[in-house]
Length: 167
Image (cartoon, helix red, strand yellow):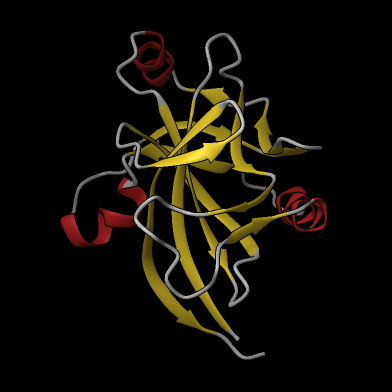
């Protein structure tokens, strides 16, 4: 089975900064046509429940960094400071998958309040059918490129790398 890494972004909403939508319910894709290797990305209750179990099984919270620096740190040698952390995911029927009880750093809280950062971008694995199979981490970013979530803008969907895994 081929598994691919992708990222997309959603708007961080007003006073609900400790709850951020990571994925919309249903099928979604980028305005630029991505993903190219499947019809669309897919998030369902069943997929969300699998991700919730994966995250619940972790001792370490998932990091939210700045501008996907966690992905770039090895190549550019720059640090990848945390903007926040989360350990709890929640499925909301008709809306999608949310990170809840997000613990923002002081710097990130100030940047969000000042509208210096407005979007959250999860990095995830997906299979050949576009089903999200794992959530790796997330980032604060300002490069929206997608539309499509109910009441939320998506952004920056980009294929980052392809991984081959056995079936």
